[in-house]
Length: 481
Ligand code: NCD
Image (tube, rainbow, N blue to C red):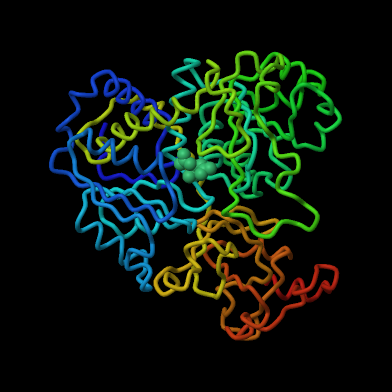
């Protein structure tokens, strides 16, 4: 099967079967590194890194050099025309006309998707803000598979900055898809974002048990745990598992402990009185002496700061330098697949695992925009050509997920495009929390941020703009006609 001309923006752009196929190709390439020279002869990779990077950029560039291809690069926004106010779409078109493949890291969430939409060549997301970092996940999964032979059924603990860590977000989705149990232990204030939790529990259909229920159970226990995610392999297993057996399970040992640094560059002001050094998890020799970690792989995407002690570097359980080293053959395999110079064979079953939830899409131009200040779709240089687009992921409460950064918003007012039916007086807007959110068909839905915008569009308030209690029976019948 060919992966030619595909882009890798989120980890869900690859099915489990494709990831397995890529890993087999990686195995082959690592075994005969010197034979790979020339595989990508004549191809050019553009390496655009608009945020600091050591491992990701240099391993991509090394990979292309080892394949015999060439590299062009831009490593600083200030050194490119983006600094002059050029849009990402224009940059993508230009670079796409020079290079055969583009690797991009950018601080705005959704930036890689825009590049993929406009470049006309395959694009690889090397990190877009706090959103995703799919190729780091390939390094992480490959390491777990190499060391443990499988991912299914393993207990993987994720510690540290679960809020801003893009490596964490991509890894969570992949672990869920491969059937691992995930144990969460964030630093205080660094908990998983709501939109990631929703995706995990609705699209991957597993069960998340949160801190509140586990608090007593884990207080003073050998394994700190704030939430646990069980995969759909056995969806009701956890619900049926008495709390006490969760701790027994934990005591049996954790297969991998993945820690990340605080993403200080992404922090907005901390709540008053909170110090970022307060209670942030630290992995050191003392911790690893505990029974639960006896055979645990210690993983970190690097760079580390204070959360991972240097005293562990020589410990055979430490995997972080191996994770980084494996980045070269993995990225060699990925580049040659997307450039179409290699292909893989995968089973139909392996290919069915991509998460493709079929939500209705909202893309009307009614003034609704993403509320995430880091989203590419609301940036001054980009609003001129990007139409905000959302997936309607829930109708009670009405919830929209931005297709670029995946943050969610819960808009306040709605109306139906099916208002007229010959009667202008039925052109009304309602509260999004009223039953109308469930009645209006997605294709007719019109969403407003505020009453004034609704009025500007010629809509009048219905009796459903406050809450359902204010509605008289007669009004209800008239409106539903
Ligand atoms: C990570 C990143 O950039 O998101 N680094 C990497 O690519 N290996 C993790 C980090 O910066 O903390």
